[in-house]
Amino acid sequence: MSRIKALSVASEVAPLIKTGGLADVAGALPPALAAEGVNMRTLLPGYPKVMSALHGAKNVHTFDALSGGPARLLAATAGALDLLVLDAPHLYAREGGPYANADGVDYPDNAQRFAALAQVAAQIAQGLSPEHQPDILHAHDWQAALAPAYLHYSRRPHPPTVLTIHNLAFQGRYDKALLAELGLPPESFAIDGVEYHDGVGFLKAGLQFADRITTVSPSYAAEIMTSEFGMGLEGLLRARAQNVSGVLNGVDEAEWSPAGDARIARRYDPKRPQLRAENKAALQARLGLRADPEALLIGVVSRLSWQKGLDLLLEALPQLVEDGAQLALLGAGDRPLEAGFAQAAQHYAGRVGVRIGYDEDLAHLVQAGADVFLIPSRFEPCGLTQLYALRYGAVPVVARVGGLRDTIIDANEMALAAGVATGLQFSPVTTEALLGALRRAQALFSDKAQWRRLQLNGMKTDVSWRRPAQRYAALYRELIAARAP
Ligand code: ADP
Image (cartoon, rainbow, N blue to C red; front, side, top):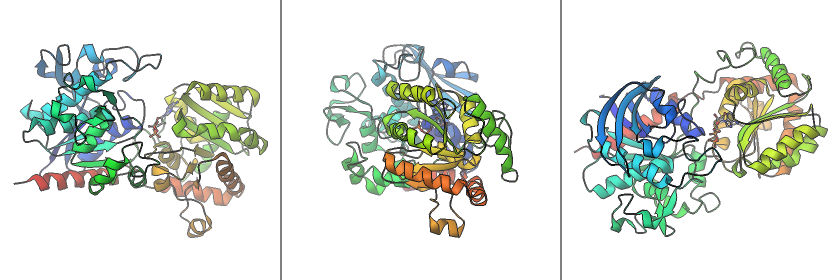
């Protein structure tokens, strides 16, 4: 079988630029797909961090004017990644993050910034540079989601398209006055076009025109067709249900492996899980927690936002501390939550350790040192941290939603008897249910043999990219075959 040429389009790609799970997926999928007969190139914006990481950059195309300024398309590599980089300084050469300035305020021209990315993606798909013309275009999230719409309205032949939703909460809706400026024809402003609540809906447009829609777990694929989780897009998703599916994410095993992790205090593997104890001690020391091997140490690494349900943890804290548990939390986000946890760390000094900020090293140590890893999300498309937790033997305690439901096997009587349990789930997502699950964890934790079995089941679970990559490759082949003359 001949190799497939795929173009992935994403606004963030690890390890170059990352704000969340999207970057992890966009960075890990191309190398995993290489083993499945797919050569994937990734188109991303030329942010300063990206520009400084490029090797062997070659000019592929020059745009005299792209959304108000000159731009270049560069082909380059960075580590194992083959890239196409849209170097448009007027759009991307900014201090701050990919979407917002250092104060967290969204850039006022995000519509133009990401429409340009999608427009160039569509042009590449239609042969802007024959050498890089793909057999399939795979767009990620709202930032890339206009690409299938541009292809549709070009009315010219183009390769099939896949749109992956990493989080339906981010939809990219902008003023309809921008329609012409974004290069969309007047007729596109229609209910079966890009129109969304009287604006231009980037994600909506992608959902309308992509040949296939995937999201990052089977449960989330089902949930987003309901009004509870659909965030206004459930009707369109239901109408396209035949073309919607869920493919779980994997983890980057080069980055997340306790046996080879240089960021943790002591490396270990399933044959020597007892060495984790040194990481627990190191984590306790690092966050000012009392040195106590017997206390149930609860780890959290998360954005602090409503989605992640950490307000429930804050509410449960007095009870947890009274029960003798400890908390190690690393996170950043909503100011009230940051303040709440910082205050709790002062109030419960020695029992609650908090680091507000983004810290890759500490994120690894939490996985390696915590006894349980807590994720009380109200919704979770896939979630990556519970997969890392499985690999690191931190038993995941998770809300029964989305990808958390699909990746953790609850330690109920039957699963324990069958020897397949890997963590604990709770539902509904309330403080009481969260406390109930952590009490169940505490009971299991006090039975050392039982706990070790839970840890080892998790550590042996296949959370690699191998199976997901096979699924995506099969999907690409199916779509390409359907187009064949
Ligand atoms: P989301 O993409 O919704 O934030 P995921 O679980 O899919 O959630 O991915 C989150 C990623 O970001 C994980 O790799 C996690 O380790 C990382 N992360 C989140 N918050 C922090 C933080 N404060 N410091 C370091 N890494 C973090």
